[in-house]
Length: 135
Ligand SMILES: [Fe+2]
Image (cartoon, rainbow, N blue to C red; front, side, top):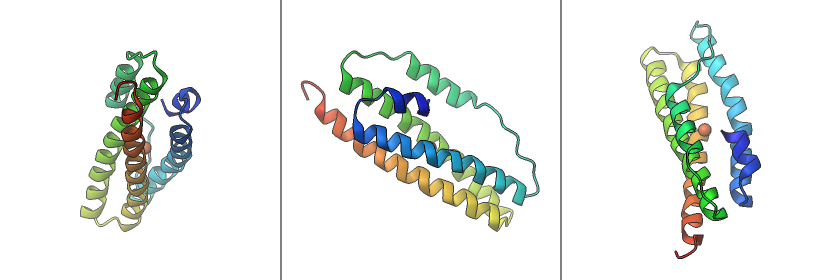
């Protein structure tokens, strides 16, 4: 969803935020793999039914007005960030409970970047809402 949104959105700040988070997301994958290996587990890629549902929901939304289209992309990205934060929160709690310090540190790094991405996207969403025609 992120790569397509980077190409699609018109708002420059939004495009920059999404592109920056796309790069961060690539490093998140490497950190998660390292966190699992540090815990003695082999990481296995798996599709998330929840995220697939969010993507399908987003793809069903249409808007002709450019600012509203960007706002829909921003809102979809915000929903994904909330899911990711919940997952990192759960994994981080497990790593701490099991005293897996190295894994916890890696996961905490990802969660911090996800939190910053969410804050940035929420700020952009506020600005876009105020820029909607009739707002
Ligand atoms: Fe994210």
